[in-house]
Image (cartoon, rainbow, N blue to C red; front, top):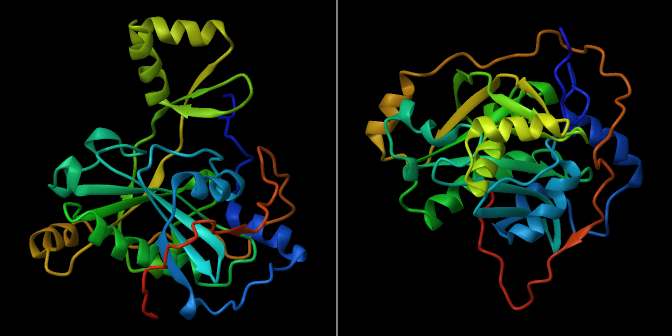
Length: 286
């Protein structure tokens, strides 16, 4: 059986972002005023700003259809971003909300997230925790957030476990389309293009096949959920019934080895905010 293609080489034991961090640590840190996570500020950023980190540090190497974006800042230097999708957009698709007995508009998805190689330990957990807090303020209709850990990237969701998210199992394998250049797209790419051309999905499949695209099944992903408000007792009780034990790595200290990177793995140059005149949101230590 032919091996399934991925955008980057699979990471069986050590996750992609950990390998990237280790590789570029020799470059040191930018001249930030401090690297104290307790003093770091999490605030909204633009999609264009977030894209600079995601395209360099995130496993998939692409942005998603996201509408809320947050960054963690040490002074004016951004050390990581989270990008959130709404209304059934993302990995879970339009039915991702169904198991939680909420509407599409009440469930958001943490679609993309990454930290720079110089971000201090626990930056990612603080970024995710405050993303949820700020999202609850900015999107009062959203009741919960889901996130997925990609097995191909060597992820088991360690950061979500650290943040106290609830693990609810794995997703089903989904249909994917691989371009001649090796970029991997999910089924929405095919259906969107079929709709744009006003043709059937079957006809679009044939066009892609004629142009050298390959169809395959993607891998399953670990799925985590976070209820945004402590007083949402109905949803909390429902989600409690879905709790499963956190996944663990099959073997600790496995063969991490030297990972041959590809697909835009060069580190992002230091990012600084250019939105002058805007004060960061007041964020308490936690």
